[in-house]
Length: 385
Image (tube, rainbow, N blue to C red; front, side, top):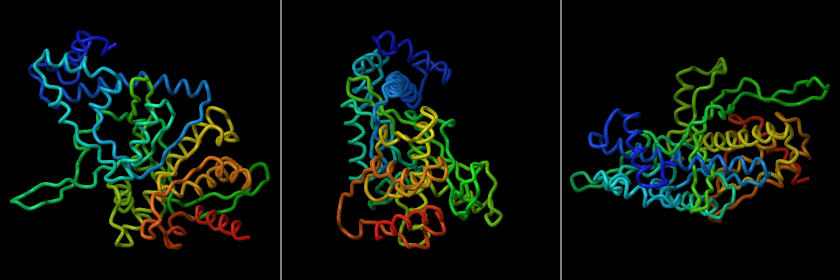
């Protein structure tokens, strides 16, 4: 193994520098050294990653999917080296080349996936769960830009975009085979299924491809690696509706994973927030449900295998979206779908201040998510009956 001892580490470090950059250790740049070390840590954590997935599949352990608009995870290199128990090997091996491991740690940008207490709480939950051996996996958006970074220019504070992905993110793994399609707009129509039953579906919608990037969440000295899944918006190969131009489509698409918490002082910003929130929960739910169905050929036991934790109001569309998927995609009746939803979704809000409890104008949801709006109306009708 690459971290068994100092000599094995040095051998692998030299090999990867040559394969990736065609350089010796002495001729390599500090950024190249950082990338190689990060890649080695990622691959080593991947061993535990695979074992955990195999264990969960074999034993059917109940898993928690933690939806949050932000995860303030900070930097991963030092944390992962320590949690994997290989920090000393890496530090001593690099020191033999005259390389200070602290200088490599400084090359890592803070992941631009969160900016406040809500994101830090979410990251702490993931970190603690992995260290305690609990199968908890995060879902959020892979924002291109973090909140902002501050610089002093001529004695004055300036705010600049946080281009944290400009050199890539060595700890993520792109997973194209797990990509899903998220629908916006269109309209709901009734159709007759082959078995003679009537059902609803969305037609003439605008499709966005949700591409997952997985980051290993390493437990402390226990071999556990959970997953933080980051969703990025990409163009879909499906046809665009006739009333949507390709330029407008690309512009709207880019906004979905551009940045955290767009300005909500304008209607455009408020609608974008709603789009982001639906994009996240629809992609995450589809991914889990597709995996569950692929393994068991049914979703009847979804509530026994998963719990979906909603971190504040942002992922709350998970409730009607899960109903939509269960009924429109997997053929559940209302009561059967509601049984799954009410026994698999949990919610935490962190304040009771009115300004922090989101509300959306009806027309936003009607236009952007017509089928979801129908389900929300029916939930409300049944509660008030």
